[in-house]
Image 1 (cartoon, helix red, strand yellow):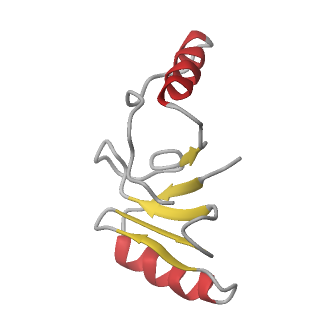
Image 2 (tube, one colour):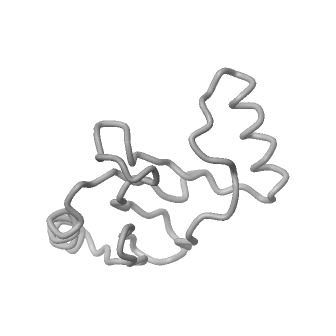
Length: 103
């Protein structure tokens, strides 16, 4: 059910060096590598773990930069779950739409 998860970082170099070594020990490697977002997995078709500079360009903190992506079948499904979350009291921190593809 989970496509990928991310943790925010304030030091991309230190974070990627740490996770490169850590995930190598379990056979995972970088499957996505951009300046502000790096992810590791066993393949591009499997769930991934990433570190990211927060979207709002603020300091990464306990919750800022954390994301869990849920792969859905259609744009309509994405819009529907986003609308439902807002109806349930969630805060909109970015409209639904295409994100950088990991898989």
